[in-house]
Image 1 (cartoon, rainbow, N blue to C red):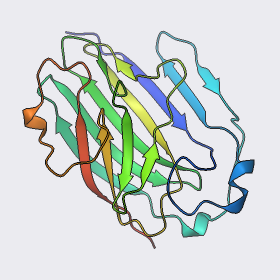
Image 2: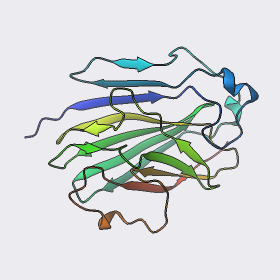
Image 3: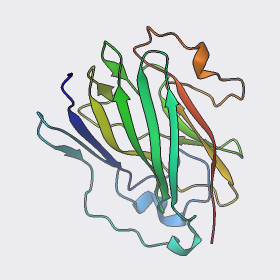
Length: 197
């Protein structure tokens, strides 16, 4: 049986003026820099940025969190699951579980990067962890955690698309056409609903 290492990638974005589309508060320049936390069983915890910020502005305008059960299986053996999407005043958080069933290390943020798009053509940039910017996963390992994207989500957006190792969210994407030899597997989860109370 392969060793099953559990990794925790917690990326908490407490951010940023600019960098995404949407209606950012006027005081966005006063927001702290993004905070990234990366922890694995065999590595110490590494953090960057301000860990203590608690922005309560515009919380009433935020979409409701969505519990999800979305799964894609890549031909190389990697399984990507989205468990939940939640919305903060400065970040969009995507809870994931990724199982590397490939016979090689895989990267979820290499080359083309990982992005979140809305249905209004807005793009939300991924907050990379300092010690694992490519979000690599060893063969036979499972990564669980939260991927953070600089927000807030646009107030008029009704759907999101998560694009992993892709520069765009294209309607013609078919995971079955991907190579079983990919070490940077591409995934796309379209039409993740944004619901407001």
